[in-house]
Length: 593
Image 1 (cartoon, rainbow, N blue to C red):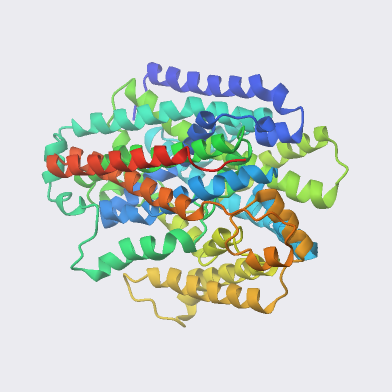
Image 2: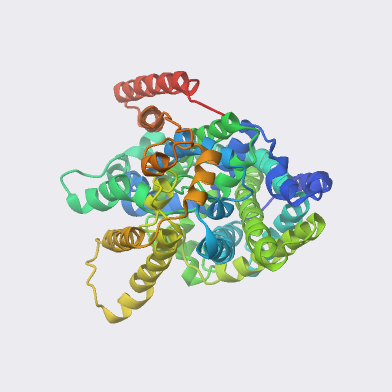
């Protein structure tokens, strides 16, 4: 496609502003490792919340949504919509606990909650496992999206795309630290939202599409509009709705949707001014991520079914793209090639923003693990702040380089999403219970981490070759269920047959974090000198339910309005309003320290 000078000017301005933010924040970021990775722990909720949203506004997310909608319809999005439940649990139960812990990274939690060599091993191993290997996998999926955008819209080769995206992102991420990432995310978020909405509106007016009304009536689209799968077809209901809602949200670990919070979400909560700002940030993130953002992506995905109904149509339209990079997820970028000069520049800048905001967050988050939880903890405990910042900057460069190399080997976003879900299957309940059940120990997490990885390896690599367990076509969700059952049974057994953590460790954790006393009674009975925290856990779970209903109703209200279903839209809007009233009235009653 032809990119006008105006479009190039918009893209160039975006790059320049991003680099200037990195340069502007470099001095303060270099003061100490806490400034580099936590921005001095004084960030407001609105900046942290927008940053969370910008990070999950990755360029691979609209590609993933497009893949899902083209294959399974709108209802297929329950595969990620279900994570709102764990997101709201984090808002009202865990956000304040994370901030109260005053740790630097969520991996430091291990040596606060557990003790001895097993805790140290867990912290060091996961620093490399998550901060390097897993993090590289995540960044590779984002880089894959960048490859497809660059190839379709700019005619760039995969290597050219990765070089451009990597160099700019690494420069401002390594210079500005978390503060640079947060400020750049804030700037990039509004560009990304404007680009997505503008593209959806313009695409609806394409001659091939005609209008929103024509789109919804098109035979390629009309059977893919329902928010829920056909309840008369259990082959759809089970994988698309029941498994996500009944099991997936609490039983699996997925970056950005960790049960109980974790990863870069925890990093944002830990850098908040106080507990109230940590709660506010995560609440804003969940509202924006699940209620406000999905529909522009869904509309473009539905329109692609009219313009490019088959993958062969995509291959014919973009013959220069490598065959292994042409899938349903390519349709999002393909639709954007129809945009006019000026808007295409904004949209390209928004897609670049989506790539860079996610990469920059994962680079800073991953390097925080390498520096704080591996280098400082195990390699050089006496390292100076200046040395730690330098190690962080070097690890940022290396992480990006390895992620770019892996991206060249991946094929599509949905494939990577399913692999990550499988690796985390069965571990999620630990991250929910470890704050409230004294019996969970370091061996619980070690066994879960090992077995979940081995089960994922078996189903994704070994079983397809030897066929030991038959997985019928259309029942791939069985892999996830097997993973959850085997992993959960293993860590529960290990928990009950191994010794609990030393009372001294448990006392320190309880007195520091002050979780509700549920699940800690045996410890508290042994140590009456500990002041038991009665907590508000039932009330907080009630707010989680009210918040989830409010946000889902807002999501559906927007959808019904787009579908021109007035009465359902009004009903959904009313339910959403009631839910938000309950939510915000209850928020002020949460006990904070």
